Image (cartoon, rainbow, N blue to C red; front, side):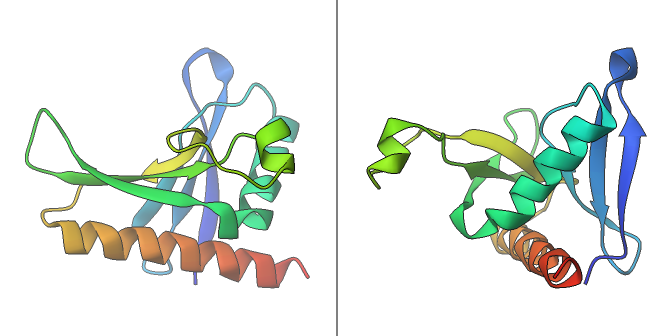
Length: 125
């Protein structure tokens, strides 16, 4: 269960979030910066509500040996209404907060992120 959702000011006064694990270690960070606290809160609520739709991708950092994960939500629109998914479409909403040495560790970090989102969903009921 996550301990905290930390909001930080980014460049130009925009806001980002970082999800901290119960042990104080960063789990995930927002992939985008938000212009207001209301926009950040709305995006966070959507992420928690739509967590079952997340697509997790693992990749290696081209500049180093680390593995990173990213979480994507599908693009909404006509294709989503019809229930079809176009491979490769979506919006990256979260990224791992740190790199991992092995892909299995990276996969575990992504799994911990999704579990943490479920914990936030239970809190808001």
